[in-house]
Amino acid sequence: MEEYLPLIIQLVTGALGGNVAGKLLKNLSLGTLGNSIAGILGGGLGGYLLGMLGIDAGGAEMDVTGILGSVAGGGVGGGVVMAIVGAIKKAMSK
Image 1 (tube, rainbow, N blue to C red):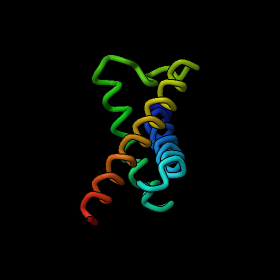
Image 2 (image 1 turned 90 degrees about the horizontal axis):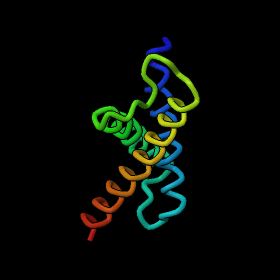
Image 3 (image 1 turned 120 degrees about the vertical axis):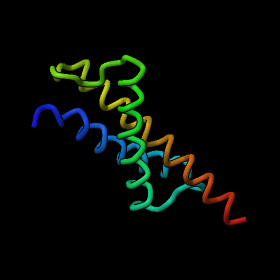
Image 4 (image 1 turned 60 degrees about the horizontal axis):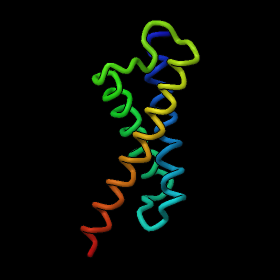
């Protein structure tokens, strides 16, 4: 279970990041459910990209640095993906 903890943190903080971005960027918001789904996808993607860049967002040992890396990667990734999806949706509706 401990090996999945960074992923769980990234997905949860991704959902939070997506919803925070939705509140800040009201014109791009997808609604609570849409923001959460886009955020979860972005959270997972953000953590994956951090790992590919060699930035260990968790790894085998979940210390404070690993947890903060997971939170940052998930939250930022979630917000970015929500904003991108919101912008695409807005552009397609015109």
